Length: 272
Length: 163
Image 1: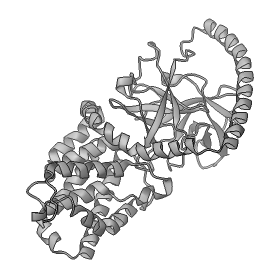
Image 2: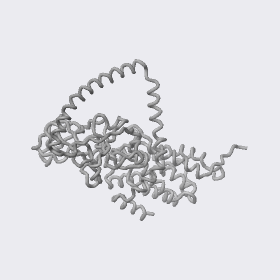
Image 3: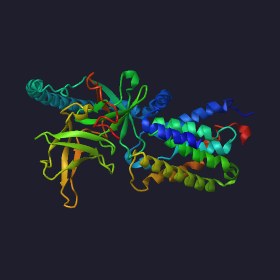
Image 4: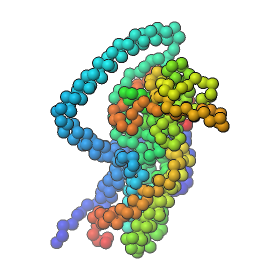
């Protein structure tokens, strides 16, 4: 028995056991469904017992938000047009923003120090390993394990996860790693004192490693600590995405070109 | 004559396991996450000590594998932990059944604390989790507190003749 377990560990490192996981995934589906019942019921209660005045108020706020969003969209269209012309010159492939499809978060990892969430889309909905997951405000993470009807998403704040980012203002590149203390923060790795990164800088995904789409917001630089004893600066980043509270997320469908190189070990955005 | 349930023990066992695994992964607010009792190891301890001929180390290993898939963790971690729990329960089942409820609860606390420690080590070795204190051990205390209630509830799932 111990030998078989040791074998499982060895296998796991090289990913030979995905088939077993997939098979058990079928059995796991009803249990996920059952464990989601309380939150479904509570949100159904919320829906049916909201006062009319609250709804009117909410509607007004949403209309205002829509107006602002439309305005910004108009501005963006111009920029995107200009950008695409420039990129054509550059022959860049990374600017392709794949199609998105909605999904719902139905569970989180029971281990509080590993940042993973479970979504209600799986292999039967054409989810593949390595797909990027976004919410309305920013980047959330990538698909880590695919099961038949569900899949686990590794969040960008997990200590195993690195996101290739660049500073919106000047294109300075860096790697954002999940905080090693599990605080729901990101830390920029290997930032030298000569790099131009300031508090309040907005970070976007750089599209390197072809896991994440280019130019999607990731987070904002919160603090920078210059410790003369260390080689690199300690830069803390607060993610834009509501990693703890959101329920609806978007899955980015990889275009055929981006699907190449989504291997866990090859992509820069993957964990190792 | 009292009403007698004529459910097969395998069916009731399956129901118990489904309930335990739902409780093991049901989302909880962050401040109680570490207090979550370890339901599946408790079920394993109970089953193995109650009927060691029917439930053994192999069953525990499969349950652990299933739990790994549910939790999305590295395959085999819970399997290994539950195998050790089941081994303890089967080798000590006579002694365990003789203990008074309070003593049983204390034993459960110790066994589950060891189980959680092993799991935490394995997770850190696999880079899946990170070391942050001993807060993960609270789960064993709550398991011990719930043990008497657990045994009481379990007595309904077993055939009357076995008691």
